[in-house]
Length: 290
Image (cartoon, rainbow, N blue to C red; front, side, top):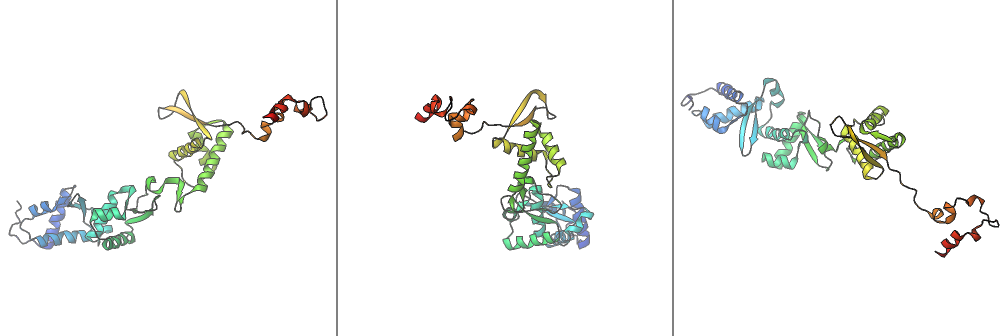
């Protein structure tokens, strides 16, 4: 039980003690903790102290389930939150929890329990203060993340997507370059492909190792490339080293290859009135019967 029962605490003193309590509890303090600590302080005074500290940016609200917790904010960080309302801070918290995957408006509204008009207002405030930003996801949905974060590849689609969606032209160019290297070299590893594309300067986008793997995989799915696992050869990841080579298919049959003349080894001496001629060719006769 607090010793504040019946004691009149000035607002500045109450705020200081409120802030000290938050600092001593890194995981945050609940309304029950505040009531217990300041049992003799009227509820409206406790609320006023909390709102004042929120407005100054010295504390922020953390929502866990149905309960709200107040957490301490370092002095140097407080400036960017100064002047934000409780609703603004709730929206910021939901977006912050989303990390590099962020949160979309419906998710924010459900987790913050705010009406749509209030949510829209808070998002505008946070964007104007450069605390959050919106990005377009590959599902064409607007997602909000913290301003200083880069969205995850699950959101943006990675190197193969642009603001307009899947970048087919860029992907096809990369596929052709990759296939050309494999065809010219015979057998290559993923590191060879990565080094070739990076040093060639044909990509203005920074590609990661998984991007190169995805590129090769598409060529495998298209039947243009096959993977070869070398028995006994180990990669840096302690798995069988995989290399890639182009798939060569036999020439498709056409009208000329079906005619006996197309595969005849002595066609160069075959003439219409010669010893060897189409009229005397048993293979031609058989083909014509078919």
